Length: 356
Image (tube, rainbow, N blue to C red; front, side, top):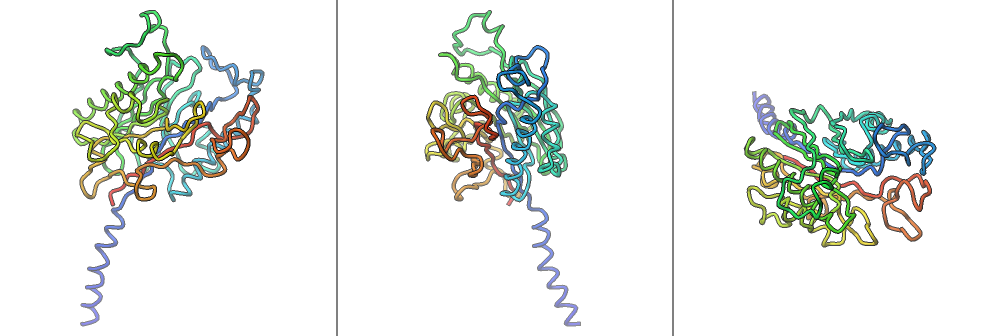
């Protein structure tokens, strides 16, 4: 009888701990600019000629297959570091859905079973944004592509005709359930830094993401939002700080603000790419207050670098140029016009959310 009582007591102690372990959830959410992931075929109406076999880059099937393998190698390496694939991975500079279908079946990452959310956009080169996700972890409820518009008081320095002719990447919004909680993800590739007034275009992009986020937060109280992308701006620039309401310090984040973990990392000297010789972080993820200050037992952004920074720039040595004038920078696909079998001119970035 004593033995039976002792066994029952052990079970009572172990069961709650075991139950807690089963309830613990942790997810990697990230973004990666794949730097011109083009196939070798012409897309009608798109200026993709340099990425054709007879184009400037002599973009052959062999080079394309090497590019796919390299992208998969990076995604797999992040999986190995985190002991899990991304639950959600936003990507940019992809030509079409076909290149993503080729990517997700690469041998190194095929077991992730990534699914795709993608819309063809109006960019003249044909590059789009998209979302890869694991369906056993994230269930898509709604998605839409949001065209860029000029419905703002910002001074764009453009005539009406120039505005009508302007083309850039759409914003992607995907809403669904992650770990039993409602999330929305935005994926962006904001306009380039060409032209004196281009800052206003990126500010409008940040403003559009914020306006759509507010709409979602009002429609779905408590929804957790992650906005990510190649913003072509640092987190301290107006598009992210003013118009996206990105705040550096957790205590500064109000109910309708966003926490911007890369501000402190930029100030500390971190970089996701090098533009005109300077270190920058354009590959940004920001999270809304509901995800930053989530109740105990629900998904919440976690510090993951030195138990201090809430984001990670993934830059292992194999992705870094080791010598020459570009030493220390991302090892990209082409260098000075020559194919060097690299990865991207951007390092991927990610955050981790957990209910621990």
